[in-house]
Image (cartoon, rainbow, N blue to C red; front, side):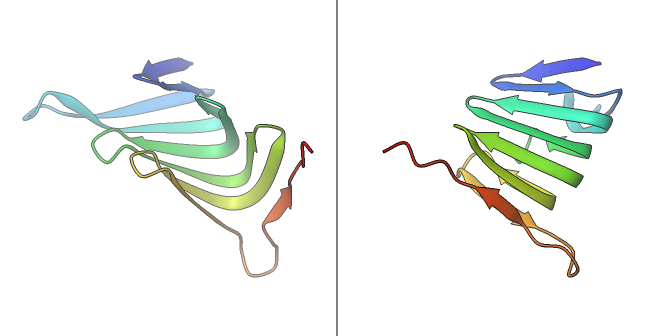
Length: 105
């Protein structure tokens, strides 16, 4: 399944939309299985994802990988605040966030 809004593309085996009839807009997109989100030069993949258009926020869970300009980060949970360009990556206490940063010098 494929969905897009503004500058965000979302692929997944299944997408579920939560629609708010009062304001006539999508409140949430819930993506499950083989989730891939693309925004500008960022590609994020994971098992489960949520997109909240009103907050302009993406949350991804389980086996998350983020690729940006050849840099790779692996974590259990990713929260992307698209308005403020803030990324918060966390992992469970038994695992760590892994990062591979490519120096182009």
